[in-house]
Length: 330
Length: 257
Image 1 (cartoon, rainbow over the protein chains, first blue to last red):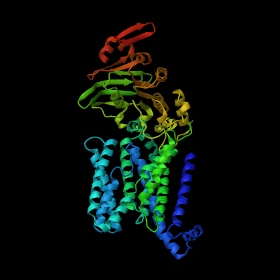
Image 2 (image 1 turned 90 degrees about the vertical axis):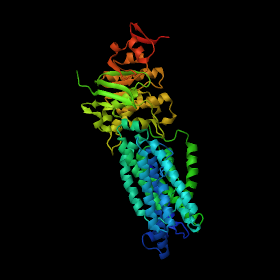
Image 3 (image 1 turned 135 degrees about the vertical axis):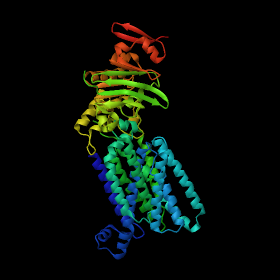
């Protein structure tokens, strides 16, 4: 009952933000006209703006926000560490390095997306292979390997930025801070997101146990090793897809699951779908602000996610103390 | 005699090159309450993990029912065998009620939700551990002893017929130590199998009928408490002189100063 109410509320907010996103921008389109446009009766310029510019971009924001938040919630359990986010294992670093190289080589949009996805996969495979080493595959080893690999990518990105010609710098910087303006394939993102949810939801109760440590989870009947591999691959693929569509957009993956843990508790059966919705909501809001705040100039959406997320998170953390989530007792 | 519910054959446990336990032969039956005694680092926790199928032994095997435990799924094992870990840790916020309900996990299908009987089992476990007033509290706000009782409540909610406890008395005040040990003793009388690592010899003598002693060099002895618990043997086990006092109501052990 409570879960349904929370998810409905998030759904409602998501729908409202979607409508606001469609109607606001350089050309403001009021609700009645928006309705006409969506039902196929609007004016020609409104149709172009809404259906060809804003709608794909909003769908991309929805997909990327949802994917990053879901990946974040999974990574935190996988690494047993509340500080983990989708980028902590170097996935975005690999994607960014490859994308920047593609940009320097003058690749088009398709080449850029392909390079980003390839770079992310290479990084995933590297961390996965190296973290195993000759020993076992522990959360600490995985985290350390990921952080070190990410630092390596960071250095490569720094190198690429410093040798890049002046005229490429702005585009590269935008990509590094997240940019939904060139998002092409939102459909693929939404498909990946739905698929990931289908795989993740049946695992949700096992995630609750894994959050209490590997041993505790195993004792209570969770087959820990396969679960962790599934989580790793799923979270990495979500991140790779998100980075490919929108560049490295920070903060959503770290902050959204935590905001929800503070507000609604840590039951992943509710936390996973709620994270997807709040992630989508936050990114839609951030992207709409990024388009309109400084219009006609656009801001990198990563700047806005952090500007929105940081105060919201700090406020909730301040207010909460330790005694936050209230789940009805027996 | 009935068939053993859990058996260890030729069980050998090593950490690096050190042998903790050599060729253990152990058979646990329903209705038995076992104490595991040994000094620090003698392999008590490692043994419990091996008996629960959480780690592969260097040699030998553990059988649950008739089957090798390493061939069974964790879910299958968790329905029959529970293990109270030495420590619990909770990096993410959770309430007492959520945590105790986690114990029901092996009894609920993948798409299933906790039903009335799961709620009932969890509620009963909280009442037994005198934690029912704290159900809505965050685990992070509990004291060490309350957390320990919560972990025990989660095991009771799981309700396996074989219960292994790694130092159940940790963090508990005397009253709760006694009530916890009394409760597991009574569960054994009702047919469960209980195996607990204890550090207090007198509690072992009072609440357990069987004892497994782990010596430092991989040697072990298993048998009834009345036979094995002697001052001489315990002195050898702990490497310190322990005196045995026979009283009308039982046998007591005190360290010699």
